[in-house]
Length: 197
Image (cartoon, rainbow, N blue to C red; front, top):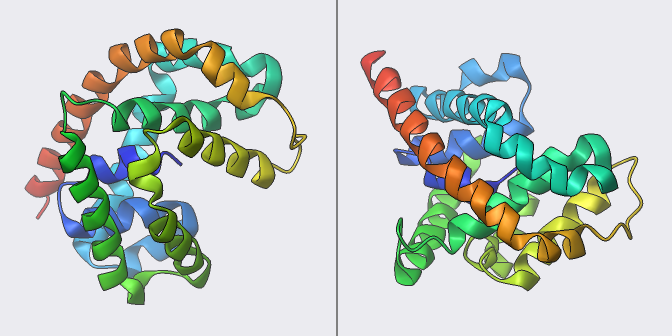
């Protein structure tokens, strides 16, 4: 999951919680949460669907597909968070830091909704400040390795990070072509969610 993008494309505290929860719950559980958290779950799914169908993401996957085949999308997600974290047209350095701190605060304030495995991950995320440190090469290297470690059918030593470094220019262009469209889509989805209230 591209944690920074999902948190940035949230329009309320409840949506932040829902966006993070989506990967940790079964579909039938979604209706047990307050409406704003349900909206975040819906937003997460809308973002993923839009992302998977975007031509720039298909291009970005070509960077990683020769190495990881069907897992390419997961590494594209991580890569997009790097370019988002360094996108000062959307936020300043101070603003990205404040965003990261807000997300950790909101998630901690809503721990009653979080499953135990997510709480453990949140403690690591906050301690190492994953969201802010996606801007650093070492932060993305850590995230890429994390995906490799969790992937059942991938060798842990595949040089995915090197592919990221070698193809930064291509991936940056993919981000530039993709993210403004995603931002517009998320804003439109949020308007629709508000009309449902």
